[in-house]
Structure formats: structure tokens, C-alpha cells
Image (cartoon, rainbow, N blue to C red; front, side):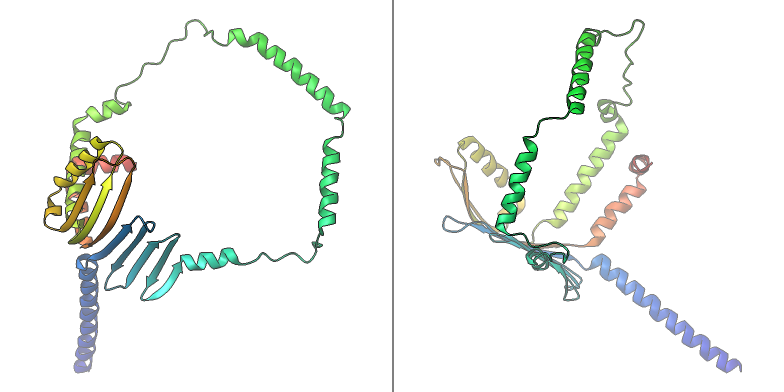
Length: 283
């Protein structure tokens, strides 16, 4: 009897261990398997702008694709099964509306007769009740004009309410805790962007603006971006153009893990100042 009980406990224990191991594996996959993305865009003198983007997660367990070429198209798939797409919406729009059986089909002659009837109804003179109502409106408007001069006057003894500094936006921004939270958010945003930046990038772009100063500012901003130097990126500014244009192509791909956002969330919860600020906003 005891031997049978031990075997049952062993089976139950093994089953619980397997379930626990599966839960741990799923959590590790969700946290550490990266969300992958790929972007591609082009624009030329002979053709219009084209754009496509793909985002996939857990070995294409979840996938989303979007593209633009004369019209916007998108598809969302789960386990390879299409859940919704732009093609489905286009089909629904193209479906003709069913006419009700009770509604008779009107010919062109009937429609003209209805239009003539509506025009005749508009030309009918206003009734006695309408004329009396318009007279009453004129009287009330005259009374309002008389009292117009009293609008600007304020009752004596009324004082303007004082603005509290604590409730104003400037007062909140001057607070040390708010400054600290803003600095924390900026720092963590740069951390996420650093993880999100493309791992592969290829571009050949030629652009120009009507104002050469703006062209120089954009070129200078791209020049100080450190990761561009390591990639196959070619940017040629045109300072002599008389029109705004951008021609060329861009290809980039990268990934980011969910654990990155979890780390940022843990940092925010462990920091007392940030935690109190977040819970204060939620109240």
C-alpha cells in the first residue's frame, strides 16, 4: 500500500516539475527572445515613395507586416494564421448594400418629381406662428443690447483669486523631485534607444532643401550620430537645389528583447522618488 502511495507521489511530483520547467522555459523565451524588425524604404525621380516594415516575435509566432505603394496594406498573423489584414477591409467596403424589400425602386422621373416638390415646399411663405416667433426674438435681442454695457462691470468687493505656485506647471517643473524624474526618464529612453538601434543598416540618400542652412544642419546632425560611421550609409546633400527633395533607399534591421523594458520597470520601482511620482499620477 505504501509503495503504491510513493509511486503516485513520484508521478505527481514529476508532473509538477515538468509543468514548472515549462513555465520557466516560456518565461525565459518571452523575456530573452528578441522582437525583430526590418524596415525598407525608397523614393526616386521615376517612381513614388515605397515603404515596408516587418515585426516578428518568438520565431514568427506573432508577425505584423505593413507596406505602402500607392496604398497602405497590412497583415497580422498568429502562428502563421492571418487574423486581419487590409485586404479584408477592402472586401467589406466593396460589398454592395442590400436594398430593403419594402423600399420601391425609384426611376429618374420619380426622383425629379421629388426634387421639384422639395423646391416648392421651400418657397412656401412662413406661417403666422413663425412670424410671431421672429418678432419675439427681435424683442429679446433688443433687451440684450441694452444690457450690453453692464457686461464689463464687476460687482464691488469681488477679489481676484490668487494663483498658487504649487498648482502651476512652472511650480511643478521647479520641484527637485520632478526634475529628477525627468532626468531618469531621459536616461532610460536613451538606454532603450541604444538597444533598439539597427544592427544592420544600408542607405544611399541624396537630399536637398530650398534653404542651404537647413540642409547643413541635417547633414551635421547625421554626422554626429556615432553608429552611422560603422554602417554602410551614404548621404549626399545638395546645397544648390531650388526644391525640397529626397531620393534613394534605406534598409535596416535590428532587434530588442522584452527584458530591456522589464529592467527599466524594475529600476523605476526600486527608485523611491520615481515610484512615489508614478503612484501620485495614478491616484
